[in-house]
Length: 139
Length: 139
Length: 139
Length: 139
Image (cartoon, rainbow over all chains, first blue to last red):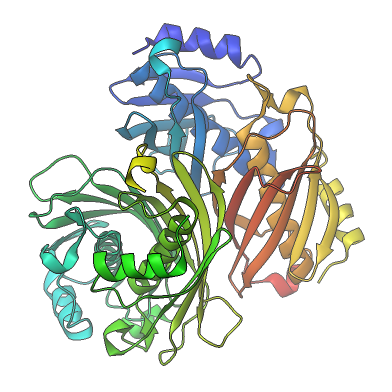
């Protein structure tokens, strides 16, 4: 297991370009926040799909690190997103991840994505992460 | 909208071969039960994957009918399943569907599948249904 | 690796209830045929979705066995299907699988499903199989 | 239908920040190229997953525009990606999209993603796009 602080420091060090912040982590879940500005918008004022996918990917990664400790080599194996509603152009995106299974080799979780302040998800993601076998050594 | 009784009668009439029963429906959700016998098992005592997919498909369909009324022509557009744990060979499968969006043309929902009596899901499904445009006339 | 005959015998022994026949296997691919009768149809004359998923599942399994040998414990890890066109009610379903990756622990493939005699797919599947670590011993 | 030149101009005007170039389009398919530099890499020299998803999303969009004409309001409805191999850190990403169905309301396609110069895909995507009803007026 890794604490909120350890994970936030790890993200800042390994992914200095990410704009995601860790709002909460633990108990097989994580909440991530990503601010939205002009660079994240598509014509029509929609948040670009790849931004939503990136937030979901980080949310899954953080939730998994919270369970298995800091394992830099865990990699996304698959990610499926369904777009549900148009996100607000002027609200941050919040990603709430809940892990469904953390096995020795594979972790599976779902992420609901929201425009901050709304209870209706803008998208829903299911993702799987492959966990390297030598995780004990890496952690 | 359709009631529990209307949907159960519709299933019995239109899908006389289904073994699924409707345990609950309403409020954008549905719970389905499917008994497990020798015909649903694979070597090793695992419930066959297509049985789980079929239960999820019915759960999505019933939840949607609960929202939009009896629309026989709604058809599955996509279905994604992740297998999480080995189901019990001697327990019924319970599928719990929650709809995430019911639009005019497309409904999206997720289904958690359990061996009856357990809280750990054996599989998780996300599915989409296409809703025919003339639903008002059909309902 | 396993031959066409070995795989057909394995399917007949382990899955005596399956109606799928192996039309071809080898070179990271497989072709499966499933006859369609009244039991596979839904109201409206559509082939039931779970039948299509089952054919895809067998096609993936057979293609993988063709690569790694007879490994009874390989299990489906995920399966995603998109329904594209209404299948013919009076034609067999043909599933053509091509593997995209066969790793030590996970194999990934796609399956195009057709009504026999047509070149337009009725559905498309991507699936992953988890391969047990002791495959050498089992093969 | 829209020509290669029309689509390239549309992308440059509507998505001035995209680094994707249209290598080919037509006949229900499209090929997209995205250069890879330091900003697209993750620790370990892997191309970031969201970059691959973005290339696939553009490839699907361009292939669809090639079929139905310039329809700015077509939006991604779902996207599923399987990561297959580690991409080269110093090669562009090439995305090759083939549409499987272009209906009135929904288009479905698959995208194989490669490191330029390699024949082994690094990832595979299936995506769906919702097409607005008033496409004729918009085109």
